[in-house]
Image (cartoon, rainbow, N blue to C red; front, side):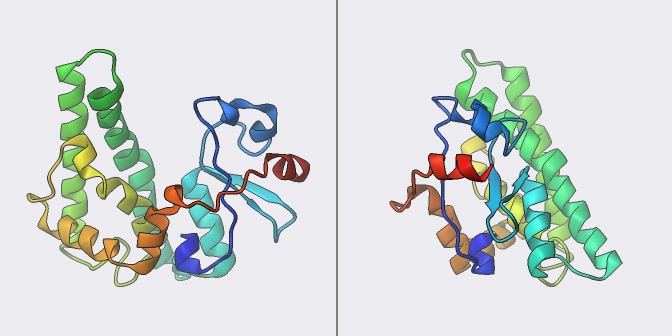
Amino acid sequence: MLEELGIPYTIHPIDLDKLEQKQEWFLKINPNGRIPAIIDTDNGNFAVFESGAILIYLAEKTGKFLPKDPKEKSIALQWLMFQMGGVGPMQGQAGVFLKYAPEKIPFAISRYQNETKRLYSVLDRRLGESQFLAGKELSIADIATWPWVNIHDWVEISLDEFPNLKRWNEELAERPAFIKGKNIPNKTNHKNNTEEIKKKV
């Protein structure tokens, strides 16, 4: 989102293994002790947590990637919530049981893989009707959903049976901002500014 907007930002990696996200200073940013979260230094060091809330905040602040027309805005938000309440949680659980569970539980793996496929089929149907999830233009719904669909291989799901979703995934993967955003975790210019952030919160 920030790359698409062209907004300058500083990355602060959180060491999840050391439970840095549970430390008191971070809980002032996100009471739930989870990532992602942002601090808007141009707005009185205003903190925003939850990915959907972050996207809505940035879209409304900049006037981009969220339609102003009530109906069109509602469509974008409906598909954003579809990701927040469906694709993300279900595909995330599929990944947990496939990759991290101490023992393989076939029922759980199958249940979450199949639900992810069902959700993909809904996306595929929608993308057979429009170029993007909310219509003719890129929106925060696409920005939120693409990172999950783009790692479909991680949960051993093929996009071959979802041609419209596959087309959409490939098109977004070629956008310069998406390419930059995908590589952000590998950047070498991360700034260890914990003390600076503590002062802001």
